[in-house]
Image (tube, rainbow, N blue to C red; front, side):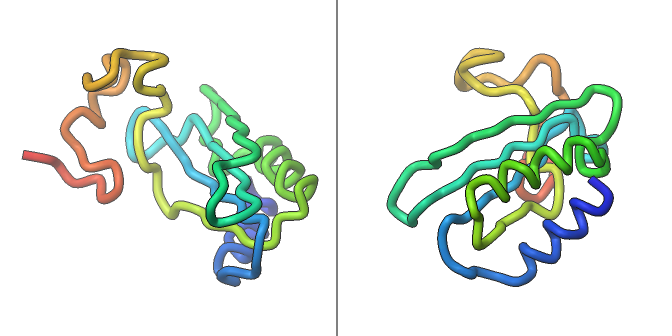
Length: 125
């Protein structure tokens, strides 16, 4: 995401500045390559996300793709986001449980995540 990632990280480090809040999360087949970024926008603490945008790339890591970064920024700016919360790592498989594979089972396309905690990346015994 280049320049856009720098801007987003800076905005995230600014802390809570009010609503709307954008959350940005990265997903990938392993913890080294992000093929999906999800942006959700919340108008208040008690409401569900008003906007949920997903951006994908099989060729480039979405964390460093300037075109995708620009698209993420456009979503955030178009909703007058005041605060940004962004993950500092890839937090799981890009496929969606119950949509891309059955509920309660590991993703058959991403065996890396089958035995890992998505938040820490550590192996689960």
